[in-house]
Length: 318
Image (tube, rainbow, N blue to C red):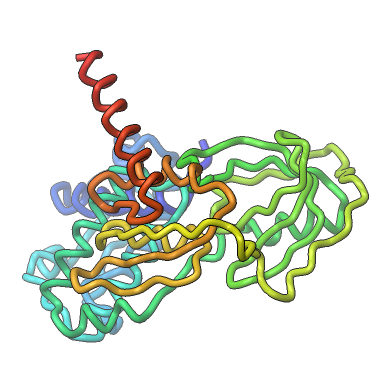
């Protein structure tokens, strides 16, 4: 079964605890316990010695294997209380916020990560505040860019499992790629066979990709002018203002916006334009207590009504 970086990270964190409690564990037993092959386990063990308790490269995990058993020579070092320097706290906070935006991350894991990030930011004080001015985005997992580039050069169709933030879901679709381009992030423009229309896909939202044997045959289309950016809201499009808490800051990452003003509590006041404000009602429901629509008032009331109806329907099922 194919796994992505998120699955591997989750597994390796569990692996550290597992090995600490089982010194000299047999490779085949550990692989069986985690439901992976021995080769996959050895691959994980090759990465763990590059991890540790310091961002400066010291205090790394001293784990090795002879192919039969696994030995961890310094487990007590990890048990010592972790004290972060200012630069370490900043690096950890920036990385945590970036990971929270990854597609395919379980919503419960995302929420737990954001809660932990908020606590760490509070504990870090001024260092935590400084980290909010920095951001990192993951371009794509594995060889997504290379696969798209190859598909374009060989005129082959692609199969994607793609994360849509507007619907908060993963969809499977076949796409005839047209071109790659970068506007802040890297995108693929292609003809989507699911919607039978031109679509733009951000590469860091591709959870899985596969080249197909079918030839790509997109219709003749005039390429869009991207000199002024990817999204061009019209001046007459209604303006929507959304306020989010720290746990809802990801909205500014996923939704094109005019401005994102910092709030005293660590949240954001986000202003954007859209020809269909009602499409943001789903976003409001997804945010829950992490955000609210400020204006227009009729959209805010519509979101509240939808939330009440959802709660009522939920109560009826209990």
